[in-house]
Image (cartoon, rainbow, N blue to C red; front, top):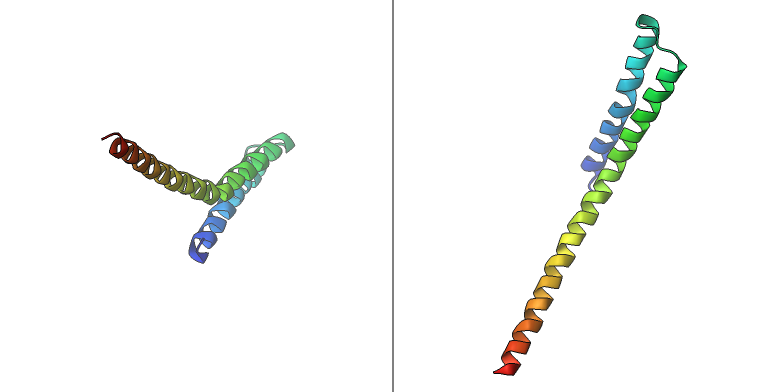
Length: 88
């Protein structure tokens, strides 16, 4: 993974954590949010950041799966062509 992708992903994660928590702090002073709202907001933000952190790994796994599937199709085609060639 290139450094630019990694740093961009880290910045997105920071935004996913900071934005809801800042809104929660503002909500405490203006809307009367309590501890439950703070805990809920913090946990949801942490899950969002975690999902964002796992996203590059899932993309890589998906790409490897496609490459393996393509290789499997090529092997199957070769085996079929050998069988067809042997029957003639």
